[in-house]
Image 1 (cartoon, rainbow, N blue to C red):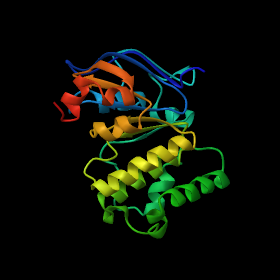
Image 2 (tube, helix red, strand yellow; image 1 turned 180 degrees about the horizontal axis):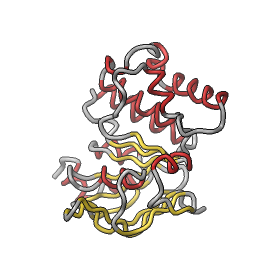
Image 3 (cartoon, helix red, strand yellow; image 1 turned 45 degrees about the vertical axis):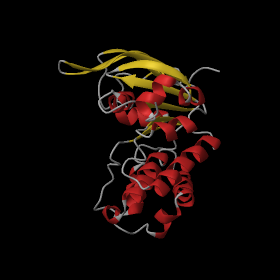
Image 4 (cartoon, helix red, strand yellow; image 1 turned 135 degrees about the vertical axis):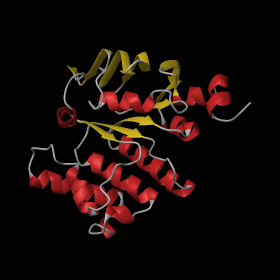
Length: 239
């Protein structure tokens, strides 16, 4: 089976600052792949480049066999690659349902299919269903994260990119979000996860990559990286 996503020699720069320095990795269909690393390692920049928000300096990005580097963000969403950004980026003055429906803006497959996915989002996150008419800005951080994930799922993606989904959440809410990621994988969604909580991310991931100042320095199965001395010392707080 071919990878659903192939990243080759990807470099990204902000002016003279090189944020990503020629990284390469694959994501296989149905996998959870995680990128871990400290702040400033290039994780968020990588996701923003994959989703068409930042142009790459060099390298190629291939999704489902099609080159997408240089493609506009909405076309990438239509191809089946969705992005739930760091900081959630919901629209606080709009209702829960209005936020969710924005996730379907690029779809052309009709109202019935969109309603089906709206029902699925409400089933996955019952709190959203209970408060569908409420302003999203009144939600807690964890509820806003559920809304951001639900909105991304409204594009019916084959692959979902999640940027720091547990940031600022209580341990209980973090566990809920991680359980949801596991459920999405069981349902066949491929996931590329950027996450500060390396322990949680690697416990869930089929494959992991450690980024340091724009370079991938260690790669391997998630379970293997959990026992890697270098990773344990740097990211899991163990000696």
